[in-house]
Amino acid sequence: MAKKNKSFEEALNDLKACAETIKKKDLTLDESIACYEEGVKHYELCKEILENTKHKIKVFGEEDYDEGEL
Image 1: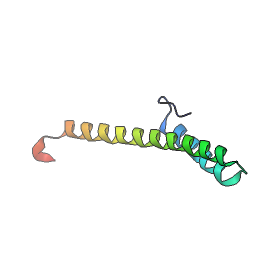
Image 2 (image 1 turned 180 degrees about the vertical axis):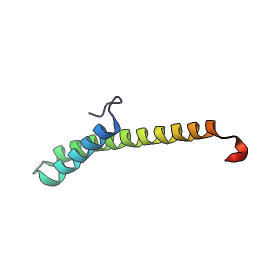
Image 3 (image 1 turned 90 degrees about the vertical axis):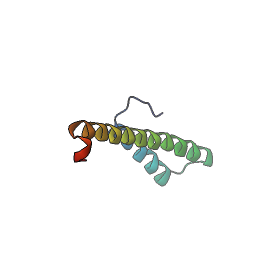
């Protein structure tokens, strides 16, 4: 399960593992759907981490410059 305290790298590795499982294993439809749903959770966590990091970079960048310099 995707947990909020995972690092980006951990979430990305879990997402990759879900994708590999779906591609390589003989899963039932229900198992495939469950793995897909788990992968979506990891994807959403990765996306959230990246968006938060982008926001932090933007804020830090704005602190370093006056508005006339941007």
